[in-house]
Structure formats: structure tokens, C-alpha cells
Length: 123
Image (cartoon, rainbow, N blue to C red):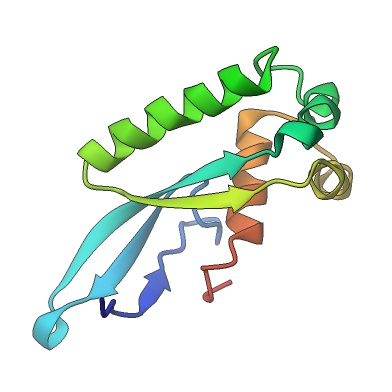
């Protein structure tokens, strides 16, 4: 299916919003409509213990983590938002946290997902 090109919207601080970033799609004759993108953090089961050691707010099991984002993805889809699943390598996430000088949190994870989104060619 053909998809129009994606152009990221930048906020007042020059940053794209995290997991619910707005993007504008060019549609017929210059008319545009916004759609939200929800980025799903996929953590492999064999990486989950390493990820959880960094991310204290994470559920205690990989199954609970996967179920949390499965439900959230369904909610976002019902709202008409686009879903992007992005693999999270715990070592790369740890490096991102150190580089940014932040604590691991959902906000930091959202930033990481935006920065590592392989489908976002507007970075």
C-alpha cells in the first residue's frame, strides 16, 4: 500500500514529542492531516532481566511487560494512531541513559524510541 512521506513536527524546544509524536502526512493537493504514532518498546525475553535491572518501573516479568504494551497498542489502534514496534537493546538503552545524564524512566525510554526509530527518516 502506498503511503505519503512523513514529516516530523518539531515543538518549541526543537524536540519531537516522545512515544506519541505527531507527524503530518501530505494528502491530496496540499491538504494535510495529523496522525499520532505510538512506539512500542519490544524487549526480547532473553534481554528482559538486563533491561529490568536498569528500568526499575518495569513489571517483574517479561510476560507482564509484553501484555502491558499489547493492551496499550490495542487502545492506540482504536484511536486511529499508527503503531511502530521498536526493538530495545538494554545495552544501547543504558548507553543512551548515560549519554543523556538521565535516570531510566518511561520518558527516557520514549526519547530513546524516537531517536532509534528506524522508520523515522526525518531525524
